[in-house]
Amino acid sequence: MSGESDLDTLISGMRPELNEGRYVFCTVPGDAVPAGVRPVVTVQEAEGLTLVLREEEADAAALAYDYVAGWITLRVHSALDAVGLTGAFASELAAHGLSCNVIAGYHHDHLFVPVERAAEAVAVLRDLAARRAG
Image 1 (cartoon, one colour):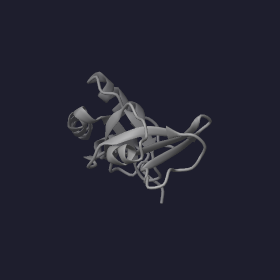
Image 2: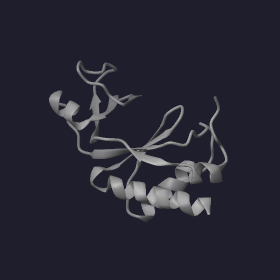
Image 3: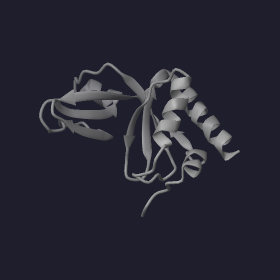
Image 4: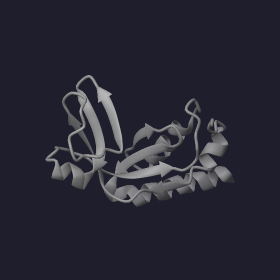
C-alpha cells in the first residue's frame, strides 16, 4: 500500500498525535538489545545500537541518556519518497524554537521533541495543518 505524496494533502492531513509516556535515546555497543528492554525504534550505527525507549525501561536497565522526549506520530500515511513534509514541519517547529528528531516508519513519521514542550509542538503542528487546509 503506497502512501500519500502530495505535499498539501500531507501537511493538511498530518493529524499529529502525542503518544503517552517519556522517551529517551540510548546507545549500547554491538547490535543486541539488552534483555528486558522493548525499544520503539532501533538504529544500527557504526558506534553501536541506538535505542529509543520509554524512560522507565532505560532507568530499570541502567542505560544512560541525556535527552527526554515526547513522541508525536503524524497519522497521515506518507509515501517514503514524498518530498517536503519533513522540511515543512521541521521549519515550523524550528520557528517556535522546538528541536525535533524524526524517524520515518513505513506508514507514518514519528517526531521526538523535548518532553516539556510536547503539547506545544502538537499545537504548532495542528496549526500548520489547519493553515494549509485553508
